Structures are given as C-alpha cells and as structure tokens.
Image (cartoon, rainbow, N blue to C red; front, side):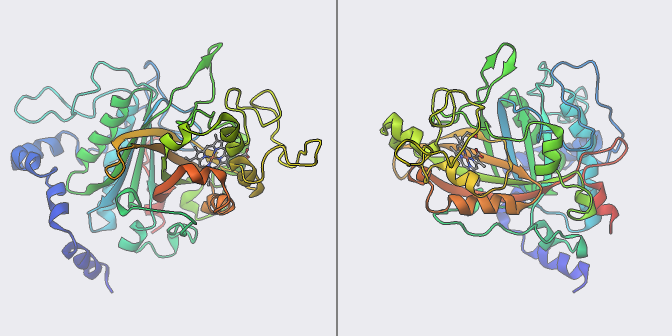
Length: 422
Ligand code: HEM
C-alpha cells in the first residue's frame, strides 16, 4: 500500500471526538476561530530559530546534551506526564512537529514564554501561567511509542524491542491510561511550571496531536545538609534507593550505546510508564512488621531488613540463626533483585480524587523506569509476577512504552536522527 493510501485510511478513522480535540478542545477551539489560531501559529509555528540554553537563569537544567534531560537529572518535586495521539499524516509533518517543539522546549527550560505575549490583537502565544516563576529545574523528555510505527512506515528503522509490553499476571489495564504515539514527560520543582510546559507544547501542535492520557504526580524530597534524600512513596517507604547514580552506571543500565539498537537511538533509552493504584486503606490497616516484610526494608531508615542504614548492601541470601531468609522470599525487593537486571526508577506519587466504585482514594504511583532495553523491565515485572507480597496492596491500571530519543545538539531538532535515516 502506498503511503498516501495508508494516510487516507488513517484520516477516515479520525473520530468526532478527535476532531473536537483538533479544533482546540471543543468550544474553546471554536471560540478562538480561524484568525485567532492563525495568530498563534504565526507567533511560534514553523519557527525553527535556534534557541540557546541561557546561563544566567536560576534553577535551570540544560536542554542540549548527549542525553535528554529528565532521565539522570535528580528527581524534581513534580511531574506532568502526557501521552499523545498523532494526527498528522506524513513523516514530513511529523518531523516538522518536532522541529517546532525544539525551540519551544529550550525556551520553556530557560523559564521563558514560548512566544510573543504583547500583541493585543491575537490570543497570547504563551498561555502565561508560568510568568514570574524561574525555570524551576524544568526538564522535558520526548519519546515515541510502538503505535507510531504502525501509523508511519519507518522501514527497518523500527527497533525490534519497541513493541507493546506483554500482559503480566494481575494486570488490570485500562485503555484510557495506556499506550500513546508520543510522550512528553515534564518534571519541575513546581506543578504549574510542569503543566504549563505540556500545555504550551500541545497548543503549538494544535490539529497535529491530541491528548490520549495524562497524569500529574508529586514527590517530597527531604534535604539533609543541603543534599536531597530519597523520597518516600505513599506507603511511606523510601523509593529509589537502589538506582544507577553515576554516568558510567547510566551508560551500562540506561542509555543505549552505539551498536546496541538502531543508530537513531544511540544515547537514547526506553521509558516504561505504569499507573499503579495503591490501596492505601488496606495498607493503613497493616502492621508495621508486615509492611516491612512486604518490601524487605525498614520503613524508617530504608535499610535492608536486619541492617541499620539505607545504602548498606541488600543481601537477599542472608539467613537468620534459624536458617530462614532475613529478607522474605516474597518481598518486593527480594523478587526484584532475583531478576538479576537493573533499571533506573524515577516515579512520582499521584492522588486523583475518589474511586467511583468504592469511595476510596484514587491514589498510587506513576511508576516510571528508564532502561536501555524494555526486557530489563519485563524480566523484573515477571519476577515480581504473582509472588510479590506488594500485589495485595496494588493494582496496575495503565501501561505504556516509549523509545526516548538521544539528547539534542544545538542546530538540530528532537528526534532528528530518526528522520535523517530515511
Ligand atoms: C506501586 C508500585 C511500586 C512501589 C510502591 C514500589 C516500591 C519500592 C520500594 C519501597 C523499593 C525499595 C527501595 C528502593 O530500592 O527504591 C523498591 C525497590 C525496587 N523496585 Fe519497586 N515499587 C513498585 C513497583 C515496581 C515495579 C513495577 C518494578 C519493576 C518492574 C519495580 C522494581 C523495583 C526494583 C528493581 C527495585 C530495587 C531492588 C533492588 O534492591 O535491587 N518496582 N520498590
């Protein structure tokens, strides 16, 4: 089938709901009208000027580099994660989308507005809610999902490992929290800055993408002697203790090295997102020793069971005087470690109101991991399987996999290597 024919088929599949989204979320889009939208596009659309990382900005993470930001960057307090459906029909239009996002992403990470906000004759090019705030360590991480490669024929550039994750025991996934053609992970030390970034990137792409699902999340990061400590999840356990910490470790575990996948992914990584509901009410009725046996760590210190400090070695084979495992064989950490592979976890808690059916908290963890091969995640999740004691307290509700591009060189654009290989 020719690319045009495929494109036509795809066009026909666009639903009324998507059409409304394309026009700027229903009524709002209609209200802006054609002239207003033209003003927005002329203010920042198709503007591929090269923006620079500013050096005189407070709380600023660099946009340009070997790897994208938001992966090995120390965790910020907030995330706004967006999964998008692509509506454009040609690869040229898709490339243009990333070209348009590149200067905007640099500006957002500089703490600047994405365009002119002074012309009173048109809607302001930036939505404005981050004005007066600094860069708040905003990071933006872009990735592409397996479904994008079903819509566009990238030939042999599709990496074999970029495919939907398998079904795991106890999964109760919902389509409305799963999948997506493109992801934008915005993390910042301010919820409004993270949201503003995604909102404006989507606005720049009006008519070219629609929002499939999104999730806001938070972390509290205690400081000790000016240094960040491991944040606690909503079960109150330190989460992120065992993680790659330096660049050499990240190259072994997280970032794809030359020859390890398709060349456009060298310096990139795979992002797994899982929306995991945590049954807080059940957890809160569980005795502390049972809670600690669930994870295999002490709640207060984060130390491995039987030890006193957080970063002491986790020895899952250690026995007590009766020959029993000190770290229970059904504990989360025992099973995760038994898989004998590693990944980088960079998760955020969420609280999204009330579960309609039960009147309980709709809260949990937006689990995010980065790894150079999705199989690292798959092996661990399979090891957790049905055995993980934590299963009594959680339900996996959403799932997505994205291949995250390498970092951007000045003068280039996000994902350029994928389009250059064609
Ligand atoms: C609501 C869901 C989850 C919660 C609350 C949770 C919580 C935790 C906690 C408290 C630890 C111990 C401290 C640490 O090393 O960070 C831990 C370790 C770990 N978790 Fe999870 N986790 C969840 C889901 C997952 C998933 C889905 C995976 C991957 C498939 C995973 C993989 C790991 C790994 C690899 C470790 C480190 C084990 C080691 O010490 O080598 N976790 N998790």
